[in-house]
Length: 333
Image (cartoon, rainbow, N blue to C red):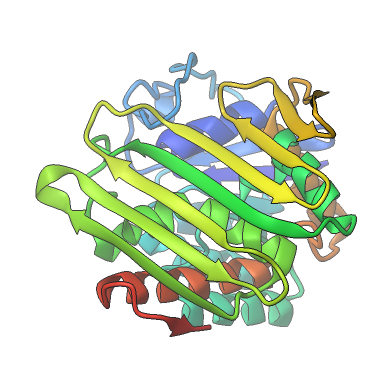
C-alpha cells in the first residue's frame, strides 16, 4: 500500500484528493497546507476553472502538517503529490526526492526547462519516481486520438484549442513570474500532448497578446514537424466569466477526428459517414494517479508520462513565448 501526502490544498489539491479515493493500493495518509482552516477539511476557498461539488473533506484519519518539511520527515509517507503554486514546484520536488519520496508534481515541473531537466537528473540520482501530472494524457478522447496517430495515420492538419477565463481565484496565477502565464499554466497541456506524439518540433512561430489589465493572455502557435501538416495550438485566458473548454480537430489521410469537452464521444468523419466512438466516463485524474501509484509502488520509470518529456514541453513553451514576444518570428527548437 502506497502512503501518499497531498502537498497544497488549493483547487488542484482538492481535485487530487477526490481522485486518490478511487486509486486502489494507495492510501491518502497526510495533507499539507499553511492554512489551518483548510487542514480541518474545509476547502470551500479552493476554487478554479472547473466545477467542483465537494468543498468539505474528512481529515480525521489523516496526519495534517503545516509545512512540507514535516511531511518529508514522516517515515510513513512513501510519495508526495505536489499541488503548490508553480514557482514552488521544483524546490518542493527536489526536497521530496532527496528525502526518499516518490513525486507526482503538478504541471509544469518548473518555470524553465533548465530547472526541469535538473529535476529529472535529481530523480535519477535519488532512484525515485518523478512524474509530471499531465492529466491530458489520461483523458479518454486524447488516449483514443493518440492510439490512432501512433498507428501510422498521416497527419495533414492538427488543431488543439484550450480556453478559460483569466484566473481570479489566486493572485499567484496572474503573476507570470510565479505561474508562467496562460502558456505555462494552460496550454502546456496541449504542448505536452504534441511532444508525447511527435517529440520536439523543428521550429515554432506564434502570435498573440498579453494584457493583464484587461484579463487577456492569448496565443496562436504553429509547431512545425517535418513530414506532417501544420500543428496548431491556440487559446489562453479570456475575459471573465469566459467558460473553460478544450477541443481538437485532426485531419489525417483516412478522415477527420473531432472532439470538444462537452462531447461524450469522439467523432470521425470518413468515407462519407460520421462514426461515433464512445469514450465512457473514466475519471482522467483517477487514471493518472493510479498510473503514478503503480509506478511508485514498483519503482519503475513512468513511460506513459516521462519527466523528460515534461521538460521538453517546457522548452517548447519557452520558444512559443519567445516567438510571440518577437511578433511571430520563427524560433528553432
